[in-house]
Length: 167
Image (cartoon, rainbow, N blue to C red):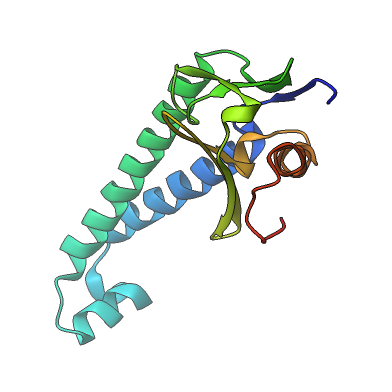
């Protein structure tokens, strides 16, 4: 088996666009909460449903800001680890335990008992089971196109024990 090395870090562009959208939408909702409730469609709808429109809009806006801040801080936490790699080298799998973990696993390929594949909300996930635990690799953490699929096919080929699903 040839040695393989895949860059494992978040896609910055996708993350920034998502955080910008949530931040802008949250700002808009916060500004709506300062307007008279009946001056906009959302406020009239909430009043018709007999709900406190000002309270709901304010809560949704601040929750959006909190998600933006949490998403940004999660990215900074992951980014401070520097470039990380998933490697298949000399009969071993070396990789971060998870997307946000500092821990690196180093597992002989012969000890991998199962390779699983799942798709959750259009995000593909590889799960690698080994005697002392499992590691998960998300498709959103592979910036280069095709690396995720290549890793999955390599692991399936090596272990011959993967699930029947194909990415």
